[in-house]
Image 1 (cartoon, helix red, strand yellow):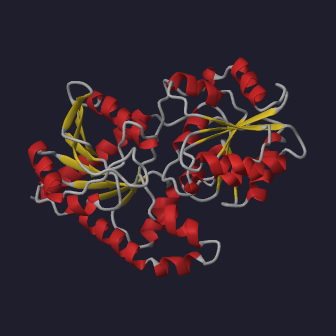
Image 2 (spheres, one colour):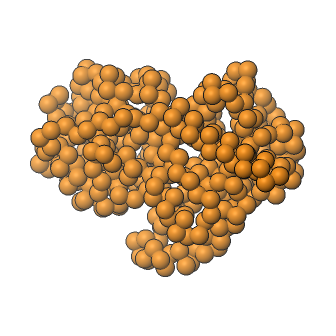
Image 3 (cartoon, one colour):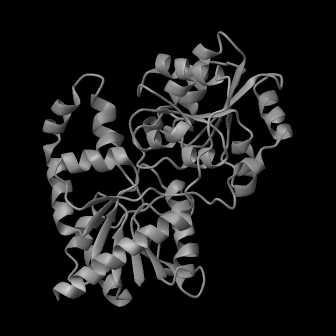
Amino acid sequence: MKIVDVCAFYSPQGGGVRTYVEQKLKIGPELGHEIVVLAPGDDHAVIEHGPAARIVTIPSPRLAFDRKYWYFGDEPALHAALDALDPDFVEVGSPWRSPSYVARWQGNAPRALVMHNDPFSVYAYRWLEPWLRRETIDRRIDFLWQHMRKLGRDYDRVVCASRELRARLARGGVAGTALHPMGVDTTLFGPQRRDPEVRRQLLALCDLPEDAHLLIGVGRYGAEKRWPVAIDAVMRASLTRPIGLVLIGEGGAAKRLTKHIAGNPHIHLLAPERDRLRFATILASADALIHASTSETFGMAPAEARACGVPVIVPDEGGAADHAADGAGLTYRAGDALAAAEAILALLDQSRPLRTPHARSMRDHFTALFADYERIREGERRVA
């Protein structure tokens, strides 16, 4: 198949979506498919990633609140690009404006909406749940549910990477949902990357000896990541044993996080590690990964930690919760720093190490996903 991914969230400076796109460009052709990522950018450009893989950008405005990203603002230009590419199958990676544009495209190719973003959790639930029950919030944002239900009718498949998101969308009346958990690069992330010297160096950054416990958090410094919950949890747990926390990321909330840490020498912020092998080594050298976001649709950092044999401490809502399954970690009540601290101590008190289940690879993910797309195409051919 020639698969065109209309990916509004792609940016060369991006995080999890960029990693996902790069893996798709590599693995898709190995599985016999042609992959074209159609993304917004400053100008027209074609970036070749191999004989059957490329990124095509069309001129688009930048997001005002995050200049690393663009958004599709010209529907006719997007339609013209799809006409020129003539895909066999179209993916759309955003639930916001671009899927409506693609739904109105007159081409014959079947379409899938890939939920790289949870529009309910990232804003409404996070902002309003301290004061309102979720049922009340859902009534107040019924316009968003109507939008998602329409996309469910317009698209042949709504791809969800976590059980919780798929179940929630299905309960809300969104048709065509399917569970396709993502994977990780298992050639890069694994227990063999653990390095005691790297662990010692990270603990030294936290002003702690090597017999202390090392926790790592990975992700953008943004409000939706809820890093204060993780920080407060580590501070509470540290009252009974020596624990260092290293956060790896960047973003607009960095100054607020520094203020929240309030000079605690055992919590250290690091810039993102662009060397993927070095990053895998850092991750594998931790004693546990702590996560606080409930708005992610998958949770790439917890998945990579799990692949490294590092136990995860994650909230019981959102995509990250799946990664604690099968004995790979512990969950805590979302947004509750005290519950997270109790989970940290419970994990550190384990007399036996937690299990390291088989890690799902990106090849596993794309093999299953593209087979689903083939079945959709075959069904449409039979109907025709």
